[in-house]
Length: 216
Image 1 (cartoon, rainbow, N blue to C red):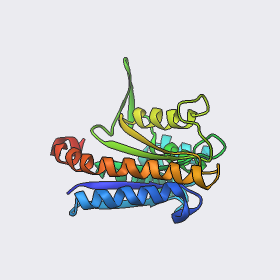
Image 2 (cartoon, rainbow, N blue to C red; image 1 turned 120 degrees about the horizontal axis):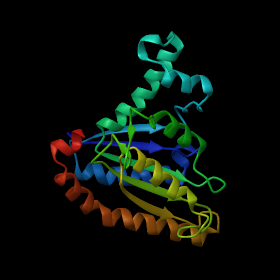
Image 3 (cartoon, helix red, strand yellow; image 1 turned 30 degrees about the vertical axis):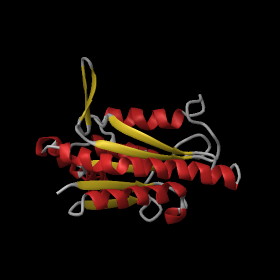
C-alpha cells in the first residue's frame, strides 16, 4: 500500500492557499491510488516545538543515558522521522512569510535532520536516509518571486530535502496572492492547472515505485 505524507504549514490552517492546493493535489493522488494511505501533519493543529539547546542535547545523548524528558523529546523526533520513512510521497505546503519559510517548518526540519540518523557525512558529502521518495512543494506567495534572488526559500527547502536524501522535488508556484484579485486568481489557476497536468503523472510514477524503492 502506498503512503502519502501531507505537511500543512500555513498559520491559517485549512484556509491557507498552500493548504488548499495541498488538499487538491492529495484528492488527485487518492483518485489515482484508492487503496493508498494519507498521513496529515498539520502544524496549525499540532505545533512543532522550536529547537532549543535542551532538545538538541536530547538528540546527542545516548539512548541509555537519556533522562525521561530527553526520552520524550527523542521519541517525538523519531515519530516525525518514521512518518517520512513510511511515506512514498511528500506534499508540502510552503507559504512565504517575510521571504522565509514558516518557522514551524524550520522546527520540523530541525527535528528531522539529525546527523547519524537521517543523514551521514561521507568523504564525498552527506548521504540521506530517505532515498527513492518524491516531494511536491506548493509555494504560495503574496508577490512574484520565482526565479529571482528573493526566492531563497525554495533553495532552502530543496537543500534540506536533498540533505536527507529526497532529491526528486517538484515545486508548484502560486504567486501574486497579495497583488489583487486578478493576480491572485491567475496564480491559483496556474497552480491548479499544474495539478491537473500532474494527475496522470502521479499515477504513472506511483506504479514505477518498486517495493525496494518504497522501503529505502
